[in-house]
Image (tube, rainbow, N blue to C red; front, side, top):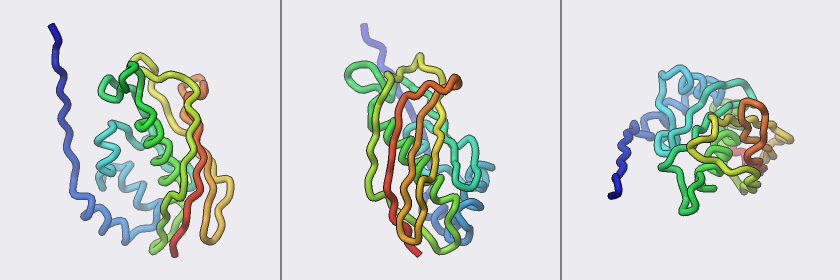
Length: 162
C-alpha cells in the first residue's frame, strides 16, 4: 500500500518586495531578506532553500535534499541544484549593485559531481566573482558539504543594467 505525501507552502506578493528592492542597493536589500524584514523570493519557498549569509560579493544559500526534490531515479533533480546555484550567483552579484542597477543571467553551465539525496547532509554555496565589468560579470559557484566535498559546480555570465 502506497502512502501519499503532500507538501504545502506559501509565499508573499513578489511585486511588493520588488517595490521595496528599488529603494535599496543590492546588499541592503539582501540583508533585509536575511533578517526577515523582506520575504525570500517565491522560488526559494518552492524549493525550500534559504539564504544563510550575506556579504558583498558572497551570498550563501543552503539546500537540504528532500524527497520532493527527487527525479525518477531517486536523487535530487538537476533543476533544483541548478536553481540554487543560479540563485547564489545572482544574489552574490546583486550584493555588489547600487540603487537603480539590476542584472540578468545570460547563461548557466552546471557540472553535477555527486549524487544528492534526502540522506545527504545540508549543502551550502560558495560563490566567487571572477570578473565584474560595467556591463557584464562572470561568476562561479560551488555546492559543498561541511567537509568541503564538492557536489556541483556552476559558472555564469550575467548582464548588468544601469
